[in-house]
Amino acid sequence: MQQHVLVIENNHTNVDIVSKLVRKAGLIPVGASSLTEAKVRFANRVPEQFLCAVVAYVLPDAKQGEAIDFTIEAYIPTIVTTENLDTCTRDKVLSRDVVDYIPKENAQNYDYLNRLLARLEKNKSTGVIVVSTHRVQRKHMISLLIRHNFVVYDCLTAHDAMRLLSQHQHIRLVITDNQLPDMSGTYFVSSLRKAFSKEQLAIMGIAGGQGMLMSAHFIKSGANDFLRLPFCHEEFLCRVMQNVEYIESVEAIRRAANTDYLTGLPNRRHFFYTVTVKHQTLSNSHALALIDLDHFKRINDTYGHDAGDSVLKTVGRLLEDAFSEHIVARFGGEEFCVYFPYHDGRYAKDQLDAFRVTLEKQAILVTDATVNVTCSIGIADHTTQSIEELLSAADRQLYCAKNNGRNQISYNTTPLAG
Image 1 (spheres, rainbow, N blue to C red):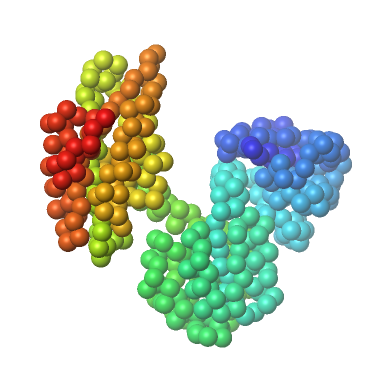
Image 2 (image 1 turned 30 degrees about the horizontal axis):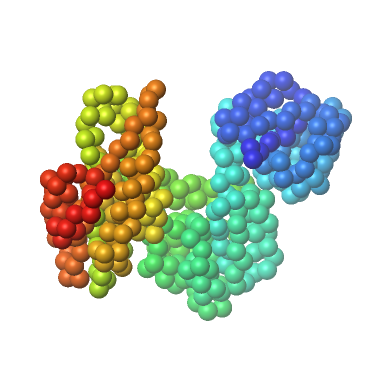
């Protein structure tokens, strides 16, 4: 369900700017120029429909931030916009349980709002661990993180945090104090770095009253960042956002480098990384198959390369559905590969023949026509062969399948045809 953003603002220019940012984020703006109108707009809706509210601090019928209280009491995460930058206004805004506040002084602040809208959605699946024995300090950080929709884990010890990291793959940030019952925070950071690189997990150290030395100790131990206590509300959230976005940026770059742009399958490079790194010790039984589409050039020549792309995307999707428990990759052109790390060739042959039949029956829409394609498959297995040797053997079997008439499987030179 597409979520809404309640925009309460009486300045038409600001309403237009915020509404455009909301639409850019893929959300639906629901505008109101006063608190009274906002109550009417909200009357027939439920809080779950709203990702957040963007609320002006001063409105004609709410001059002291009463509209902020309304959205918070309605359980809508609230971002406040304000014309005034004085300390008194800031303190009044931040005394409430708001997500953040944004001055209307320049375009860069609206760019921050754009990032914030995107983060509030992403944070629903982003984990953060807070490790500290200082209850008030820990609860304050957890409260700020929850307002930003993070999935937050509360820990008293380093060992509890390590256990959570082993159980949850979505954790991107660990915030740790140095005074822990089972080890120092700096030792905890150095222990985490043995298992997670700075590109995999961000770590932020926190400490107070220990001069400049503590920040250096944390950074040298492997922390990405450090925050001194007592911290500023905005600085804490900005640092959290920057650290999480850094991890996500690296993930996006790695994904682009490892993914075939057309089919979305892992590419040849990532295939070799996955097999050689994640399966360093080959199991007693493993198999590998090379799959090549038959007469693929005819499709490109007859219907054009866009049609060929549609066929490759369909084949990629069918492979992903059929072999989700195994390792699939596009090797280039019309050639694909499936690796079965814990199964022999007989098992692979049965699974691949079912796929071959499914593909043969699949009508693929290209331009203004439908086409059917077939594939030839070569399978190799051996308990002692390396991946390179398996590939060579599978390639020889694929040649046999092509040579014997296509649309068939060759395994130990015995074809299984349609």
